[in-house]
Length: 289
Image (tube, rainbow, N blue to C red):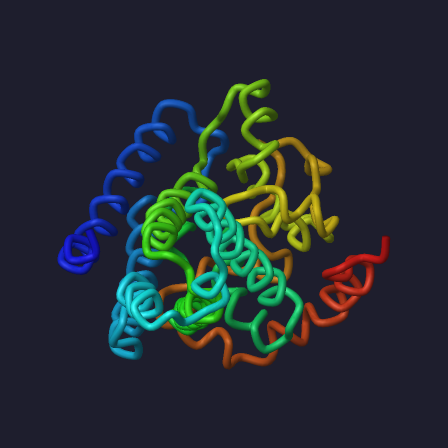
């Protein structure tokens, strides 16, 4: 099995990527949730290019993929889980929850640590919310996310099968949770009890005051409920709710070069510093019980 995974590591991710994207595109076409501002050509070219640069930078900086590192950790008994005798199902469950908990915590930090927020703002200054928003991350953020994932794999000794499941699941979730698509309300409520839904994550991309400081979940919705960062609904309905950042929405959508250098620009972040600080003060990462 390990030889198969090593041999087909890249192919598995590519198949998951295109399969999930195709399904979500069909869903968005059939049941769009909202009219979008920017043209498809502009959104796709900008967001896909950011994703490509992130992938290339990760491959340049990390000689071992997450799957390769998990295999190496298992072979050398690295990590806490490799030192504890547990049933295989429990081992897998703990590993999946740990990977997603780290993703949740990193996402919260990206919003609350000023230097990280400068990088993550590239994702949030999109005035639209569709499946390609799930690709719109600054390459430096892609490196930070990969570093966090590799660190938890070594520290906990995440089993290979858990890494494979979570990586493929996270790829699909990036498209699914950013889908500009409708779900029947009853089904959405039931799904949201365990998993992040597009409606739940759309609130996180809201330009309304305070709403982007909620619903940080990546795959599972349980972390937002546990750490009290969950928001059930926006102050406005889906069609009317503005997407993006209020301090950018009055300007034309940024081109790819402007997005690359956005973290280095000071003026936009000075403009929103007071508002961001107020939101953080109101909603600490771990609110008192």
